[in-house]
Image 1 (cartoon, rainbow, N blue to C red):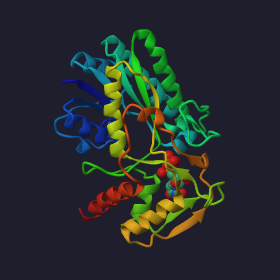
Image 2: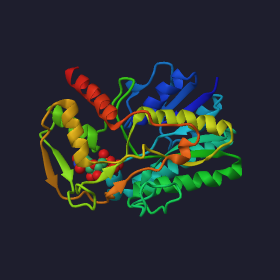
Image 3: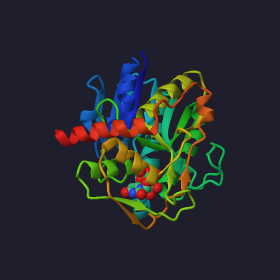
Length: 321
Ligand code: UDP
């Protein structure tokens, strides 16, 4: 039985992945500072350490005390807008603290790491859908920290380490009774659903003058369970010494207005929308070409309707409890 150390395991994508790892017979160790994570979202079989990656000595001790076969590194700040207000906070956590993790891996001869990267590494590429080879010109510091850490991981081959970087597109949906719960919430689908539950009055559409068919931004929304499955696949690939960088999306884009309309259908709520100015730094369209990853027999299984239905089932349950 393999033992996987998951950093940021109590976060949204991390906790889904932990559940799926347990289901697939892995031993799971989680390090999470709980600054943004939720301890109650973790399966009880997980060995949990409340720790921050800035504490190298503690992290190294955790490695020394456990036989770790591979690492999945989710921990990091995720708010692109915030990264433009406080870039150093992002470089400190997403780059500097993450280096502590590599140091601990190196000290303890752990070779394999799967890294949570992002479509944010690309900025706004000229060609759609986006291939892994597209130019990387992040439009915010968040995307830059992801790109920097990808490059740092490349350099770690010197220490005989190998990595798979999964460049997520827009994670959404709910599984294992866990939904998207950020504080403050900034993501489109949970915000729309909060209108349907009565927690908000309306949804603000950030920009209606983009060069897209209905003028609103297009994103590639992928079910969090399809993303979790991508991590299990990545661990299998590393076992076969297959490494690299992979887009993880569905290849299908939906505009903000389309998403609002699907939410209206699913929730049977009118969901008032207000047209607002653009949000700074938003590229008009981001859709993945995930064929490189699909060659290894990974396929997204969930449609955008499934995503929204699962998110709604979870949100409406939260409201009742
Ligand atoms: N968006 C919006 N209103 C909101 C939140 C988001 O119109 O209240 C838009 C945002 O401008 C972007 C898309 O929805 O075009 C997805 O935004 P989100 O923050 O969910 O993900 P991102 O693509 O920025 O990672």
